[in-house]
Image 1: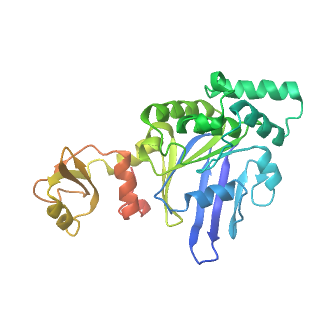
Image 2: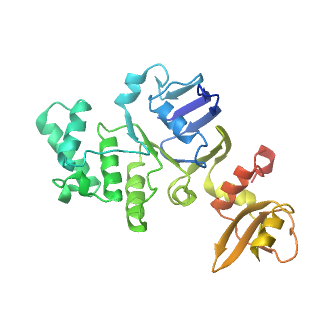
Image 3: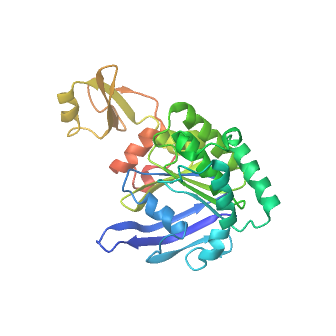
Length: 298
């Protein structure tokens, strides 16, 4: 089963074009949707999750028309939104049992077995009777995945799932997502490039509602290999360089400002050629250096 999106658009009443003729083909496995805050990622996710309508275009999951058959979509959908709230005074086991009832699991024995199996899968079984208000951020996110996995979904959407997690919880969450993605279409929507680099075999970069790039991470990185240059600079030098070269990013490193630039040849004195990574691809795409198809051919 694959997800096929064609020319999907959504403009809000305030005039903001949240998504603009988005077209994607997403097979089973982990698919990364990268973009800055306000890029249109959450609007696209909410549309696919049948929480809002689109103005035009189409989206199908196998034989299911997502825009016109919402009940069929919800039967095979798992969704972990960016702001997943829980009832703090309810235990993990009781709330997951409640969600299972809402999902249509009416047989008590089958429902209990399902709830226990999911809590084990997300490593929360030992704390199943603890109130959710006492869970850490990572534990709440793992509970969110457990509720999203109810009913064995064919499409799993997770929106900014690792934001705010400490490194240990982030790794644990990554492993959980990788395990789930074996035979499910999983869309990981995030602005954290390393999450996509670690997990996804395919990705799309979106900004201002438009898809800028799609492809395999390794292929996209190879497309900018040999074109990423770096030099240390003072703060004033870094600002001046922005007007002179195609700056990809600036960051503080060991007390120095490191400027990374995109160029087919050395952009100037002090620059050295460095190994490119997916973060370079992301910033190049957002800056418009890789927007044309002929510029990204591997």
